[in-house]
Length: 481
Image (cartoon, rainbow, N blue to C red; front, side):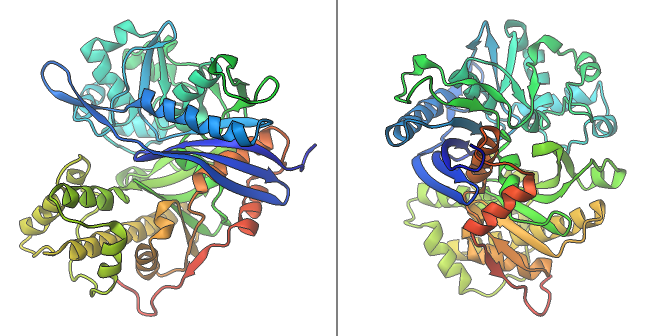
């Protein structure tokens, strides 16, 4: 019955961790319970001439199944399962079998693909056709490397990470449109760009049928032997790009607000009804990615909490007994740094000693970098906040949306220092939360698909607002620049 409360499971795979969430959803109900949480740790593999960085996707899938088993024990009548994950990375298949663990977008191989693609299609034409920002690891650049190496010759299928997990759960291979929009291979109308694929020498037969968020892909395979009742839950396509799911659960008025989906990356933008494909937008590296219900996520990628998490890992590798929580507390007591670094500098993309690279950025400009971990954390937070505020201003200018409020969702919503710094630098209030926006958006789309809810995105967001009150951060009276 529409509006009656029921349960769905949201599989949410981020670039550093994954989770399976048990959600109860109804017209007046929105509750999340964590069934499983696990690390997403990439692996380095020797490939004959270099060590390559891959995702341990089969390990992640095993953790997903364990999490779904936990859900089944408490909710045997589960209605649906949906999967979201990070963008751009994919698996290649032959006769339905995965040919190897997918490459990690931070692997160095991606750089070679840029020249291979741009030799055939200019960046300007790519932007006009796809509206996608330039990132050196976009799927089309990775595919160009696979084509050059001969890896595509053995493949007859291509599935983005969340679609691959969905395939393993349901037995049906599809491409959900929000994540497919990050490949650089879709037209403005949201279909596979056959002409572009032909120019790049990519076989059209590699790419599966496109479906929209809310489509029932199939049913959970009985061979998985999960203890669900009856024929088992549906497997439903959600906004499979994790940011697309997160934006569903931002309790905002898109006509007057910007959002920051803040996790490993900080995705800063606005929600629009149509694309903005201007020279100014391309110069600012803003992207037009697919959203749920045909909306457009007009946004810019900022390096995000990766800068903090990778710095913490480096200090711990050096033997320092530090944690993010303690360093943030220390950093909050320090004065604002006089100089900031460019959080979008591509030198910070690769894993490794980020504090040393940040110090090098300052040294190249004759500036002194913070000497202590707490000082470094403070300059990272303030530099991120400035990058966020700059992207908010650009989003407003390029789209015409008058931004009166900024919503921060995801893990960054827990970081009070970052939220306050963003409010101070953007000059508008920041509303922080919900933290688990991605899982909530995933669950809401499933619930609507199976009849537990009805209504448009604004109706779904109103349910979020009633159940997850955000924390408000007012900007400083004197603007921080």
